[in-house]
Amino acid sequence: MMHSKFDQTLALAGIYQAASLVKQIANTGSANEAQVETSIESLFRFDADTVEAVFGSIAGVSHGLRVLQQQLTDKSRRDIEITQYVISLMLLERKLARRPEVLDEIEKRLKEIEAQFDFFSLNHPNTFAKLGQLYKDTISNIGPKIIVSGEQPYLSNETNASKVRALLLAGIRSAVLWQQCGGSRWQLLFGRRAYQRECERILASL
Image (cartoon, rainbow, N blue to C red; front, top):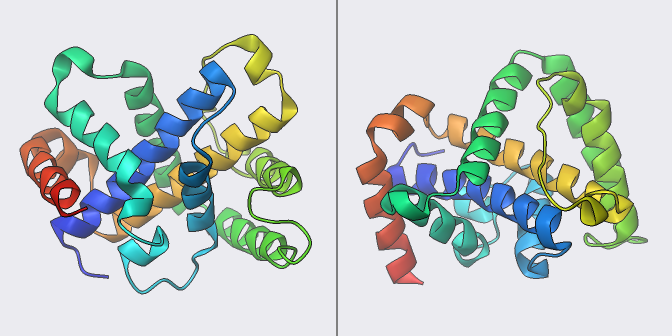
């Protein structure tokens, strides 16, 4: 893949989109279904030729681009909770990169889940349950665990809990993609303005 700022920004937006959707579900019990589906679908784009193809289109990650832009632009409106999720997802991706056996297990299980799409759609509760269990069996054992804050009635709902875990898995997938495109936390720390400009440029094209 080309290591362009465009690709890095899309991949980074994928992380922010997943983190934002996790927060929404944990606090309200729901999130935009199309945005959730785009994030979850990225888990099954094994052989995508471009970063854009991982998300289906630029529009598929437009929510993440807007969240990223706001986080980079407006300090007064910066969401610390989303930032914490993003940092945690990046840390988990780095740990996962050193565990090839876990990566192999995740790929194997994802392909098994994909094989059942003739019976259960991508957004079927059964699919979320299997993805949530996959997260618990693999990522949760790597640590540190991501503590999701929210309203207890929503967090204790098993379907919501599975969606949250599935989205965290999707966030890690985007973090892997970001690393593959040459992204790093140092770039995000010292190159915020470049990502901000690229967000603005991409969003203006939609």
